[in-house]
Image 1 (cartoon, one colour):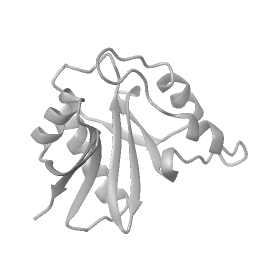
Image 2 (cartoon, one colour):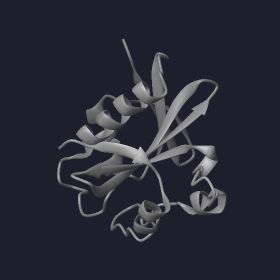
Image 3 (spheres, rainbow, N blue to C red):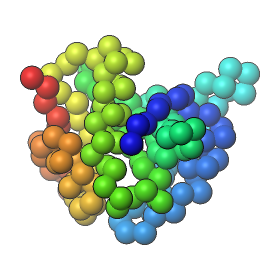
Image 4 (cartoon, rainbow, N blue to C red):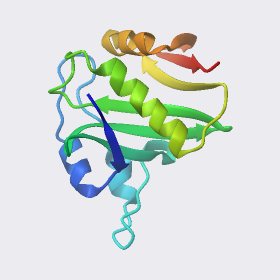
Length: 149
């Protein structure tokens, strides 16, 4: 499946805020987008000041991807639409999101990172399939990294 990435806007956020998941994650934290939205420019930032993108397939919202930068290292956050979870799309979704981020932000560091709750087994499986390895554990969170050659 081909994914297209577009800047987050209020229409997409209003759809995402209603996504409900069964399993470990119940919903997506989007309040910072609403709180930072500038109606004059349409600009907004997500949690931690990240830049968020709606992910589309054939002009339909299918996910979201977030890009954070800490000490010049890219960290990602992501969510796939609940109706697509478990359909075998996760690896492609993650890979295309990473490629988009690397190109969009001209990113050329040696790795990217993400953080996942240690109890979120489905996400950990997808991240490992995409090439992430466990780097560090702190309480309930696991930092995973994908290294580039």
